[in-house]
Length: 203
Image 1 (cartoon, rainbow, N blue to C red):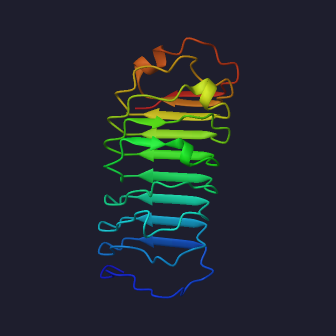
Image 2 (image 1 turned 180 degrees about the vertical axis):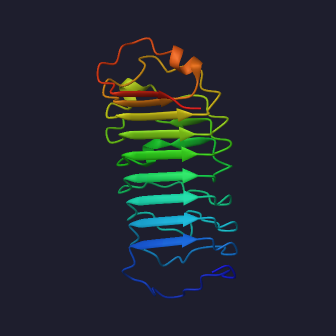
């Protein structure tokens, strides 16, 4: 739908809509404000799409995938049900990702976020199992992983040249799968992880 510009919806036209896939709608500027029960939202290649906290209800989302939508800003609100989040090629304005806003997320993938510097966290996150950060050139630090990410089993940090070392405590003891591209990051691993099943250096 290459000519679609506006989603005009003055009433709740889709009161039970739970799954929405929007792809290559290059002129679409926004989504309906009446999507109150979405569980899964997939948005890809929508150049002009703008989403903010004022026009998107996130309370029921369980899965969120956004690819190549440069104007999309993830609403800063709590996502109490979200379990999987994959963000790629968006969020140029994002410098800090607030993990505490996503208490139930078990899979988090962040790719090509040009200004992302770190993942912020004040409390231990007991749900996150898979964390992948790819091609984020400004990304420079990870949380204190053993303490703050005790459930992590898979970690991938690729082409994030500003990350020089793991924080104090190194990897969580439960990590089974590890993929890194930085020699300095690999060299900072000083503790033996007896649970590790696979390790790869990816270029």
